[in-house]
Length: 109
Ligand SMILES: [Zn+2]
Image (cartoon, rainbow, N blue to C red):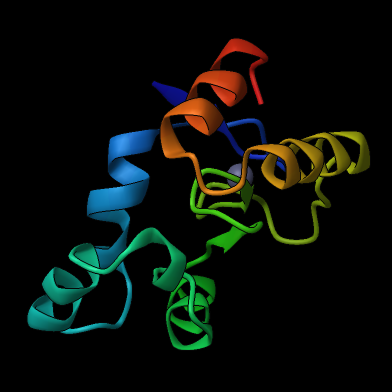
């Protein structure tokens, strides 16, 4: 399933976000592999958010809420309506990965 970047609308496969994108950060291969085994609630701890930010990623409350991605042009801003909508859906569904992926995919978010 795909979710879309709130800034450039690029589609991202949910598997890539949750399994592969971590290897594009500055973490070592071992650290990135360990990250994959963390519970989803710990995957965006401040240290990991900082690593993702350095690699061009910005996420909302979950990895499925892509606010900025490496494909975004510098200076472009995320769509405020999309930001609000995705944050609201996250608030309702929490970290129910499958439900979030399905809602974002269905609504092209
Ligand atoms: Zn983007």
